Each structure stands twice: as C-alpha cells, then as structure tokens.
Length: 442
Ligand code: LLP
Image (cartoon, rainbow, N blue to C red; front, side, top):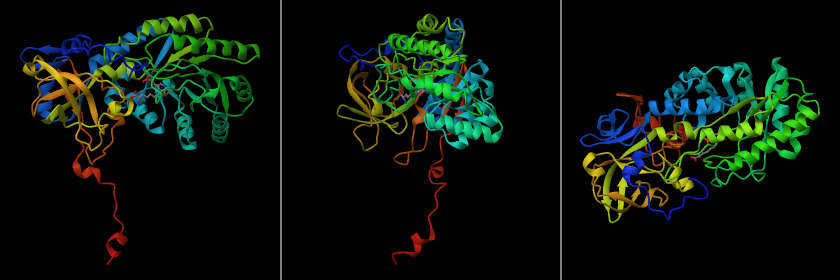
C-alpha cells in the first residue's frame, strides 16, 4: 500500500503489464506463468495450494542492485529479517554478503543459523527484554539500536554485569511524516519508536558516561513502503544536524544507521530507487566521515515471492480461493493491492471481467481483490498473488485451524520445497487438556 493510498481511479494494470514489470516472471504459450525457468503450475501440481513460491534469482539480483547503489556511498546493507525470515532466504542474503537487522532473539538466532556474521548484525526494536539484550551481547553483534532512556539503562546494567561493553546507536525519532499507511509509519513524534529528537543529545551525552555502553552513533527508520525521497531527505538532514551538535559537545559519532522503508511497485507505481536513496544519503550524510548502514526488507524480497492459490468455486461475482487472510493478511490489514495473475496459459489470456477474489474465512475482510479485471476462472484454476515475498508468510497465522502452507524456492531451472505443508495434527500438537476438563461437569 503505497501512500498516499493507491490512486485507484487509474485502470488496474493488465496481466501482461504486471508480468512485464517483474523480470523473474514470464508467460509461456504452453507452460503458462513461469518464475525464472519453472512453470508455477508444475509446482502447484506437485505440492498443492495454497503455496508460497520464492525466486532466489530475484532476491539475489535485487540484493546486488541495492548493494551496488548503496555501496557507492559506502553504506552497508543489513537485510531487515522481519520481511521474510526463512533460512533459505537468509541464506541468499548471507551468500550475497548482506548483514542483518533483527528485532527479536528469534530473528537474531535465525540470522546466525543462516551464517550471517554477528559483526554484521544490528538489533532494533522498541521493547528488547533483558534476555534478548544478554543474547545480543553473548553473540557480540555489531550494534544495539537503543529506543528509549529506560532501555539504555537496561543495556548498561546487563552489559556491566556480564563484563561487556555494548556498542549502541541511539535511534532518534526525527518527527518526519513518511506519508505511509498509518499502521506502518514510524518516524513521527506520535508513535512509539525512537528517542524524541529534542532529548537525544542529552541522552547521548549521558550514555557516554554510563558503564557497559559505548555510544557509537545514531539510527533512524521513518516508515515502510516509501516511494519518494523527500521524507528521507528531511529525516537525514535532521540527523546530520544532530551529528554536528553531538560533535560540538565533544562526543564521538562514528556511525549512522539510515533505516529501511524503500518501497516497491505493487500496482502501477515504480519501485523505490536505490540510486535515488543513495544520492540523498550522500548529499545529507556523505561528508560526515561516518560509517553508513541501511536496513531494507521489503525492497529486497517483496517482488520475489508469490502465493499460489486455487479457485474453490465461483459464486456471482465472487471467486472463492483456497488461500485466505490468515495466509496473506496485507489486503485485510492495510487495504494493500496485490496483483493477481492466472497461472494457466489458456486462462491467462482470456477475456476479462470484474470479480472479487476472496478467501473462505467468515470475515468480509478476507478479500484479496475487489472488482478486479480477470479472465473467467473456474474451479481448480490456479492464480498467483504477486509481490508476497515480504510480510507474507512471516505474518501468517493458523486462524480457522488452517495449516501453514508449504514454501518452494526456485533458482533458475531448479526448485525445491523449503518448508513442508504443516501437518494437520501439528496444529494442536502443543496443546494439553487438563484432567479437570474430563472430571468436571458430571
Ligand atoms: N528497520 C526497522 C527498524 C523497521 O521497523 C522496519 C520495518 C525495517 C527496517 C524494514 O522496513 P522495510 O524496508 O521492509 O519497509 N507489515 C508491514 C510492514 C511493516 C514494517 C515494519 N518495520 C507491511 O506488510 O506492509
């Protein structure tokens, strides 16, 4: 969901336009929709639907493009693990030389399990627990981004008790409105993230006096799905001012973590431009002599994933599919627009008419698309919901006792299942029914 909210008075892009804008997808006259060299229909037939499919090639080439644009200004790329934390995805990032931005002990341990060097891991998040801080120090990660005065004291206490020194960056709240969806904006004074701009210099000076912590710089993250450079420019300019103010007080500032948020084109928007972002970073922060970092998630993996789903039945203008809001929650949660493309060759090129594509869950928000121009779909036809690689599988639940779908990864002509479909019995495997349930009521 780009913001301002997608301009829906322009016609939706056609199937051909959606495919043309995504280089890892193509339409083959016989095999239908291909991701890299593999027909998606083949994967649906082999592992069933719903199923997630990721393109390793797309992730790899997007990482390369981002690194080459941001590397030109000396910024290190830390992949925001929250966007997609599968070990194989993290493996692509690790092999490509990315570090990681993590927000929980689980993400930290996933990143380590995937082979990402602790020296390239940054820990962000507004509510790190003592246990998480301890784990971060045990792993000796590059940096902890501090989000509040209380957290700074906690880190100082935990690190001192462990005989360690934590490298910390203060995450400042630059009070810049990134103009994104209200549920994902993070950089305004209204929300819970970061340290109030006006308090940050004093807190940094205080940090320099505390045992167990070494303030190394500043961090910020102003929101997600940002498609223009203006909010970045405003936020980084305020950050540069603060670096000068800190240095004027004799404090050392070695690093600036510029955050993530670079958007992608879900509908007919162009992807956010890494080169434009790099240009803004260079012009605002480039001459400070600081080590620069960025932490994008969505831009790296969003376009690289699809959710395959089959038509269960059609009813009036409704096409009911076997995926639902518990699998991909973005449309229900943020009114997000996702492209939907038929996978079969014959279907994909058929005459289009408006339909609502909905899941089977008993809530009207379980809707993937409204009045979408699609060819006539019949029971069993498979469609791909596009751009589901970021904030897709990671946000799934098993609501309505629906097992988590399998995940496949494609690399060129090869593909493999990288997560099995969750077994039905696994849904209740951890549950216990206490004896008093059976002994009461009689
Ligand atoms: N760094 C921090 C501190 C963050 O909070 C986030 C995202 C990122 C980096 C990565 O942002 P990205 O480059 O992926 O935009 N579930 C929502 C998005 C939530 C983003 C939360 N923070 C969605 O599906 O649109």
